[in-house]
Length: 177
Image 1 (cartoon, rainbow, N blue to C red):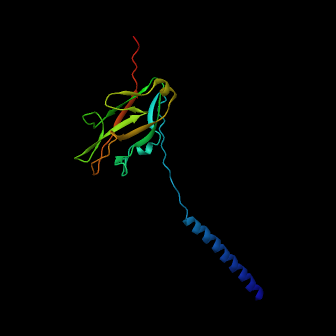
Image 2 (cartoon, helix red, strand yellow):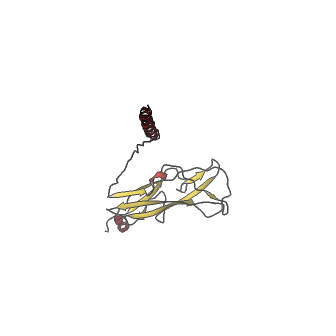
Image 3 (cartoon, rainbow, N blue to C red):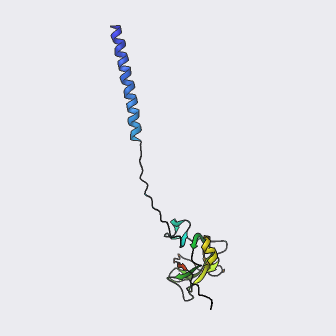
């Protein structure tokens, strides 16, 4: 009888041990997580491109920020990469421009005129070459900067909104006569 009890004890121990193992596997399976990551990639033409280095910001509202020490807006600066294998690159401001041809922020009553530069060249409603033919052929990176049009302290308050729209195109070169 003692022998049967020992066999029964071993069988019970094995059953408990098996349940413990299966229980931990089942508990582990309940903690599993799976993910699906959707990906996309756009490979631009090698012939012409002007694109933001970090593309996530371009379709989101950007906060220029206000420096209370100077009473001026902070400069918004973003990097772009560019390339044009057939010539320079020109840029033009488009969209909602004031009478001076510049974008602006408005609160409905007051306005803050803005200045826009690309690669250090001031942009306006007239096309300007912002990357030379030689630099564009190699390709590179440069800054787009949006700032207050003047350096004066602001004397207005409120919530201001606006937009800056621009077009980049291959520069049109005219042959020498």
